[in-house]
Amino acid sequence: MSAKVRVALFGFGRMSQAAARNLLRNPSVKLVLVASRSGGEKIGRDIGDILGIPATGLIVKGADQLAQSLAAARPSIVVDFTNPEASLTNLKTAAKYGAHLIVGTTGYTKFQTEALRSIANMYEVSLIMAPNLSIGINVLIDSAKKMAKVLKGFDIEVIEEHHRHKKDAPSGTAIRLARLIAEGVGINPEKELIFGRQGNKSAKGREIAIHAIRGGGTIGVHKIVFISDNERLEIKHESLNRNAFTDCLIKVIEYVHSHPPGIYSVEEILGLGTPAPVAKMVKMDVS
Ligand SMILES: NC(=O)c1ccc[n+]([C@@H]2O[C@H](COP(=O)([O-])OP(=O)(O)OC[C@H]3O[C@@H](n4cnc5c(N)ncnc54)[C@H](OP(=O)(O)O)[C@@H]3O)[C@@H](O)[C@H]2O)c1
Image (cartoon, rainbow, N blue to C red; front, side):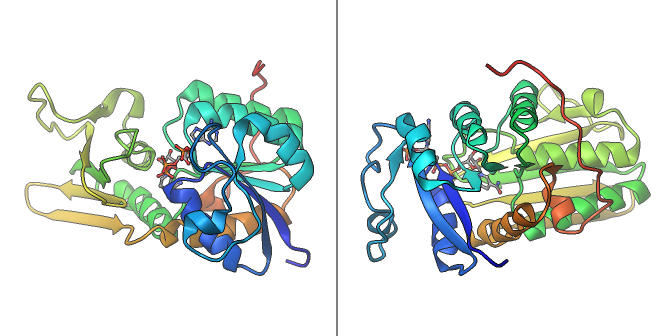
């Protein structure tokens, strides 16, 4: 990249702080804005103070002053790690200011996802829904799709484990994995995906069950188990620290910066699977 890419971070919790550390070290990126929850204890503080590094001169702004902050900082890309409700409002404002949207937040409903696509369409900015920002997890997804095509007839379970603070369960990545495997095996994800096996639902070789474990500081584990009467195959990915996400984020930022506006997936950006054409978006009222 020639000129530095101007990047804003929305939210300043676990993920955004990890991202900020990485972005501050990257010579091709300039972190120009950090905006978080209005009234929160981080507002008005230098991000260096929060990160435990020397002062950076970048002060955390409140989301209630987002329009003014965007006008002053002029980010070309916004990276969001907040929660679905907050991000819908904040990302609409960012798109109005012409910023491309990288959405790391998870837990969106279908309606919220469509609303984000519509916002990107309306303001002609890029949208990357990135619930799985890690190179390894994307390779796991790609491998699982291929394995599912061969392992038809095996019972399949998806198991995920995260820290005790995670707000959504099961994880967006686990649901995506199960959906893609269902498509690979040739079963209907709407009917045959189940969440847990409460009610003594036996494995009948058709449905795929997703199980969630919550506890401690576990950053993220995703495991897929394929079992037949005669053999068992497991593939597993574990994030050892949050740099697993932020290294991938830099690749996504570089891609967005060097490509025309469109809706891209992280898999496509990493060169995995068949590149999807730039997606068409559904117009809907997001006012
Ligand atoms: N894409 C991936 O690979 C990946 C990986 C891990 C996690 N995630 C997802 O990323 C999201 C954030 O995770 P996290 O662990 O960083 O959560 P977190 O530590 O709770 O951070 C969330 C941040 O959002 C801020 N916030 C809340 N409301 C806001 C608003 N209206 N405007 C602006 N900021 C607001 C919070 O402010 P306060 O600090 O004042 O509360 C906090 O700083 C979750 O959805 C999580 O599942 C994604």
